[in-house]
Image (cartoon, rainbow, N blue to C red; front, side, top):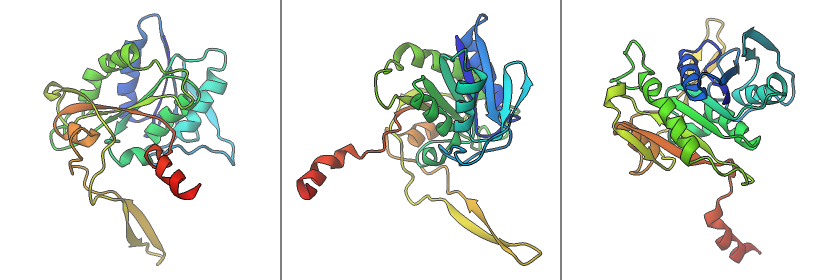
Length: 262
C-alpha cells in the first residue's frame, strides 16, 4: 500500500512522527509512506488553499517534503507533483496536537487535508489526540494514538471506506481520548458534537509600540457534548470515529424551504 501523510502542526511536529509509525504499520514492509507537510504550523486554517500565490516545496529526505502552504495545499502538492506518477491508495492527516471534536472540526487544518483528499477521490482519515490532565504530562502524550491508530485505520479500510462513487466522498474524523493508551475503553461511531456556550474569542494585548494586537483564544475543551457525539465519547475514554462529507447542504431544511419559497 502507498500512503500519503500530512498534518497542520508542521513538518517537525511530534504528532507527525506518530502518524509516520502508524502509516508504516498499515502500509506493511512492501509499502511506501510519503510525507508532504507544511513547512510551518498551519493550525486553524481549515480547508484553505493557496489560490492566489505560489508555494515553495522542498525535499527534506527520501519520500519526505515540506511545502509552504496549508494541509490541503500539501495534499494537492502530493497528488499532483510529488506523487503525480504514483497516486497513493490512502491519505492520513495528523496526528493533531489537541482534539478536533465538536466545533473544532470546522476550523481544523487536519480535517482540511483529509477533506481535500476525499474531494480528489481518495480514502482519507484525519486523526487527532485529545489532551487532558491524564495524558498531557506523559513522556509521549500521543501514546493512545500510537497504540491504537494502526488497527483503527485497518478496520476502516476493511469496513468503512467503500463509497468511491459518491459525489462527495466520505472521509473520517478520528479523535483519540485524553487518557493513557491502556485506559482507552474502545471505539464509538459518533456524530459531530457541539459544546454549549464554548466559543472562540479574542484577547487584546498592546505591544510596547502602543499597537493593539488580538490573540485568538479557544473555549473549555472539557465541556461534554451530547451522548452519541464525539467529545462525549472522548471524555468518556473512547476513540470517536465520525464519518463526514464536504457537502454543507442542510438537507433537513430542503422540503420546508421549497414549500415556502418556490
